[in-house]
Amino acid sequence: MRIMVILAFIGILGSLASALFYLMRDKGSSSKTVNALTLRIGLSVVLFLFLLFSHWMGWIETTGIQR
Image 1 (cartoon, rainbow, N blue to C red):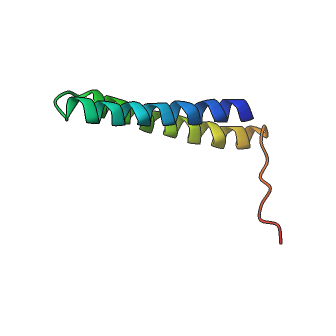
Image 2: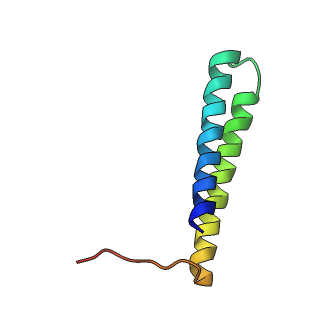
Image 3: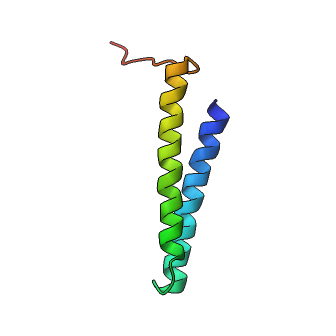
């Protein structure tokens, strides 16, 4: 489970880096920046839904705040 979350974060950061690269390189003349940011948002939503589903299935457990 931990490896899947780490891979998802790496994918999100990679998409963000590619959006920055296309923004600096193309100067907004193409839609590559928008596509990379759309991919980042999609990956973030999928990761969030996967974490919710994993909690519902009991694959991960909440630890709560220790008092």
